[in-house]
Image 1 (cartoon, rainbow, N blue to C red):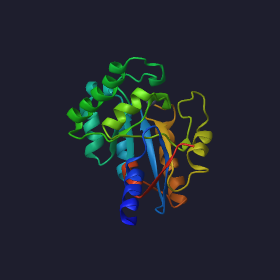
Image 2: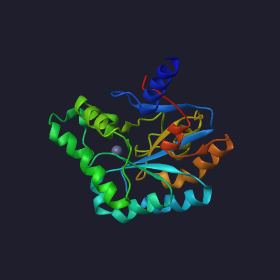
Image 3: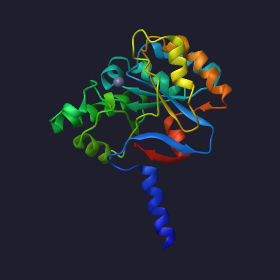
Image 4: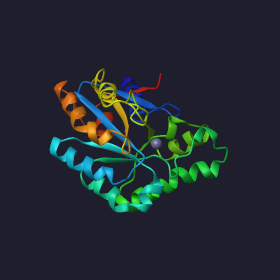
Amino acid sequence: MTIYILAAALLTTLSGLAGEEIKRVETNQPWVALTFDDGPSKVEEQLLALFEKEGVKATFFFNGNNVSKNPAWARRVVDAGHEVGNHSFTHPNFGKIQDNEKTRSEVLNTQKAIKEATGKDAVLFRAPFLAHSDMLWAVLDELKMSSISASVFTDDWQNGLKKETLLENATANTKAGDVILMHSWGYHTLAVMPEIIARLKAKGLQCVTVSQLLAAGSKTPKK
Ligand SMILES: [Zn+2]
């Protein structure tokens, strides 16, 4: 009996709970996840070269719209061993969509575009603006996808953010299990990336994909 209860609890932990975003992961591994939203774009090519050199794995939340325009770029990211997640098709605010069909097509068409480009099914979702709705949760639940928020917000989308501030945001309080949110188009993202990796490494932290991080621990739902 105890075993069944434990097994059920474990399954619930691993699959996540509907209606709860995953912000970070409790883990004994010295691992963090770098995540980049809104691609694919040409920027990823330069990130990939750096990540290869540094032994870094990352997670890219792509918009289906961009994937269908640039399937080869999406493919390159997956071929390099990184993870690709679903970030909707046109980057809407799901909190403001009233239409169930629109909600479904945003997620499903992106799954299709990612599958066609990379040969893989995305298992992770990140909501644009981190905005959810009950309709969105129903689709994610149906597809058994986890919604990934973040625990480290770099604010790299802010024009005029100083590079040093961005570096501090990304690394100063970052600890094992954290999910770091960035954008591949961020104003200084490429420029600061080598130093972000160096500072994380100096803290003994290794960059892995979100799925690797999830597999190494139990999920902590959004507060
Ligand atoms: Zn986005």
